[in-house]
Image: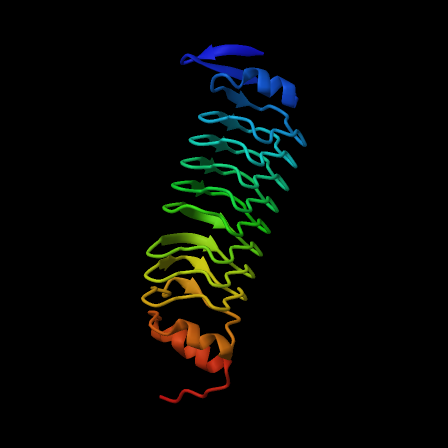
Length: 230
C-alpha cells in the first residue's frame, strides 16, 4: 500500500523485488514493515530513503548510494554493504549481526543502539562516525580510527582491533575483554571506563600513555601474578 506522508511516499508491509525498488528510485521513499530479505539492491541510488522495521536479512546493498539514509529497527543480519556510500546514514536499534561493510564509506555515519556482532568493518573509510550503545562482539575493525572519539557503552569483546587508533579516545561503559589489540594505539586514551579483562602481558606495552584507574592497574598486575601488598 502506498500513501503520501509529509510529501514523501510511504510503502507499508509490501514484499519488494529489485525491479520494484528500482522503479521507485527516482525519489526517496519511506518503507515500513517491508520484506526485502535476500534482494539484490546493489548499485542503486537510495539516498535519503528511510527503512523502518524492514526485513533486510541477506539483502545486498553493495556499491549502492545510501547517503543520508535512515534504518530504524531493521533486521539486517548477514546483509552486504560492500563499497556502499553510507555518508551521514543513521542506523537506530537495528540488527546488523554478521553484516559485511568492507570498504564502505562511513563519514558522519551513526550507529545507535545497534547489534554489529561479527560484522566486518575492515578498511571502511571516512571520518566522524558515531557509535553509541553498540555490540561489536567479535567484529572485524582492523585499522579503524577512533581517535579522540567518545565511546559510550560499546562492547568490543573478542573484536579484531589490530592497528586501530584509540589515541585520545574516552571509554565509558565499554568492554575490550579478550579483544585482539596487536599494533593498536592508546596514547592519551582514557580507559577508566573500559573492561580490560583478558589483557595479556604482551599487550601492556600497547597501553603506554593511556589513563587507567588504580583498580584497573592492580587487576592487571594481579592477573599476571604480581602480588600487591599494602
